[in-house]
Length: 202
Image (cartoon, rainbow, N blue to C red; front, side, top):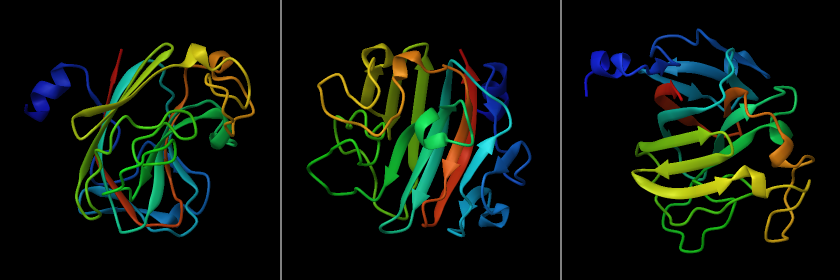
C-alpha cells in the first residue's frame, strides 16, 4: 500500500521522519533525536516523549527495534502526562526473544495487566511491527502479525487488582479511567528506535 493510499484511508502520520514536531518530552529533550528516519531514544533521561494531541478510539501502528537487554514501552491513553505510569496503558517493549515463559512484563504485554499469548518478538537489532487497537473498553495488541493480547478494560474494576485476583501496580481501576489520552514513548535507560508511527482514528 502506498503512502497516498494510506492517507486516503485517514491515517494520521504522527512522525514525519525528519523532526519531533508534534511531540514533547517530560524529561531531558536532548534524550530524543531523529536518526535515519526513526525516533531514537538515546537513554539520557529523556523521560517520556509524548504527542501533543490526545486520542480515544484508534489503530496505532509503528515499528520498533532495540539493542540487547533494552526495556522500553509504548504508552497510550495517557490522561495525565505528569503520571503516565498510573494514568496510561503500556505495551511493554523488552528483549524477550527466545523466552518460553511469558508474563505480564514481557514484550507485547499490556504491562502488569495481561501477558502476551505467545512470544512474537524478534531478536535485538531487528524491526518489530506493533499494532494497538482501542475501541472503547476493548484493547487488542498485535506484534509482528500475531494477536498477543485482547483485553476488556471493564473487567479491571478494582484499583491494584486484576480480574483473576492477582495484584497490579495501578492506583486506579481501569474501568473508571478516561478513554482518551496521549501516546508516549518511554526512555527506560536503553537505546530504542521507533519509525512509521501512524494512527487511524476509529
